[in-house]
Length: 257
Image (cartoon, rainbow, N blue to C red; front, side, top):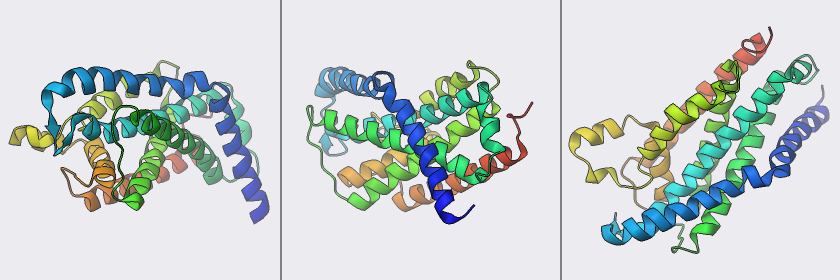
């Protein structure tokens, strides 16, 4: 395939993925907005008013970056895991794998769909946050970079989950028992400086802590961890997940019966 054909192939698959979640926007875009409103009302208003300042900021303002990352992570992951498992269940993924389209482009097409959904929902959550608190962005480059890298990483993670899943129940295990606990223990609603030294060390084993804090640094200019290290770690995981997913797709592991 020449460059033009490669571009058309990637563009077609990406647009298909975008149209898929946009067609059911009531299920893919709106729930995160409603969840954000509930978080602001319950945690921000009722609880936050008793907490006061967090990291030198109003609690709602401190919480807003974490809620944006929560939306980006869950939507990027869920989009790819559901979409890829769907084509795998319908056996249509086999048609893609035997087509002239390179395997790496198939992977990028699904990931691109997850990234677009993650970014769109992240923007919607940020706009929703404006109704509850002031939104500031101190470092635009870091803010945008962290969102893109995080959405790529969790799109790849969703793809890996879908590859190994044998039933629709399997695509809910990781989000429910792994992803959700890591998100809520990743500094979305609090600063780890409030924890004891032991729990701070335990918290630093949570990779989501670094993503949330790197994004919070981009918006508010404060972070509990080293931002350069956090961004480097995200990039390393992206490379690892990409290579593993590409290998599995080429070998047909978890796909071909």
